[in-house]
Each structure stands twice: as structure tokens, then as C-alpha cells.
Image (cartoon, rainbow, N blue to C red; front, side, top):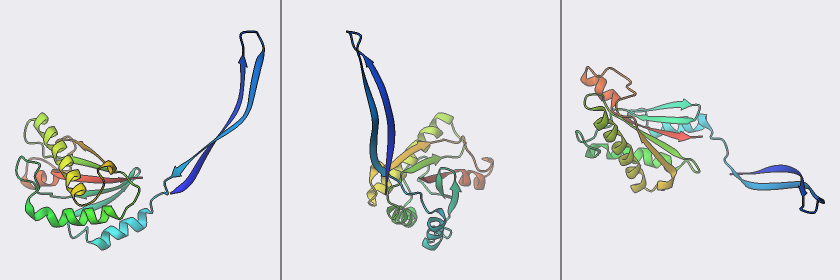
Length: 177
């Protein structure tokens, strides 16, 4: 954290009921802690060293931060519960996120577009929330997370094939700048 301050210059004139005026001139200073910009190159290379590529987790730098796209995340069908074999990937993600201090994480859930849009939206929200719960249970503070569901509105592939639907079922975590 870096100290940051803001200086406001003041020149205020008040007119009183009797017609006289009072003038205040000067400045105010407001101090707070600022966030150091994240070292995207170092962070991206640490993800690669942690084995993200082998764990089917894509890393994508964005204007707003770095996105981790967890490909082919497996849930119990039509549920927000992770399959037991996902525990290793969840542990890997949590271990990495724990090492990133002072950042907020945006978790976005996506589904394949094969049902009612309302149901897809609700399921994607539940899955995003479930990812947050999984990270919190692994030691990351809940107040560092924001979550959102997109349903099947942002596909990466065609929903006509099982491989396309599998690619569209994903959870993305953006480490916000």
C-alpha cells in the first residue's frame, strides 16, 4: 500500500444576514492508503509455475485485471455442487489467490444454453456463489469477492455439440486491478 493524498484549495466567501462577509482561504489535505498496481507479468508467470495450464485454467490479461478461466469445471448435473474430483483444482486456485493481497476477485458463472434462460441464469449465479464459498472455506475472506452469473448469454463455443457445451460451462475469476 502506498500513501496517497488529495489537496483541495479553498476560497469561500460567506455573506451573513447583516450584509457583512467572511472569507476563508486555504487548503485541506485528505490522506489514505492507495493500492500498488499489480505486477501482471510476475503474477502471470507465477500462475504458470503453479501448474494452471496443466489444470485447464486459462490466464488472460484484461484492462480491469487478470482473468482465470476454469475450463470444463465439473458440477453435479443441473446443480451448483462441484464433483469431488474438482477439489484439487479448487485447492490450487485458493492457494494462489491467498498469495495476492489487497485485491478484489470478481467471480462469474456461465452455463451452456440448453434450457430455459431464467434457469440458466439462476444456475450460473448459484455456481459463481458456490465458487466463492469454496474459496472462503479455503481461507480467503468473503469480503474480497464479488460474484455474478451470466447464464448461457456469453458462449465461447456452439451449444450444438457436447464439447461446445462443455466449453461454455465455466467459472471465471478476475483479479481486479
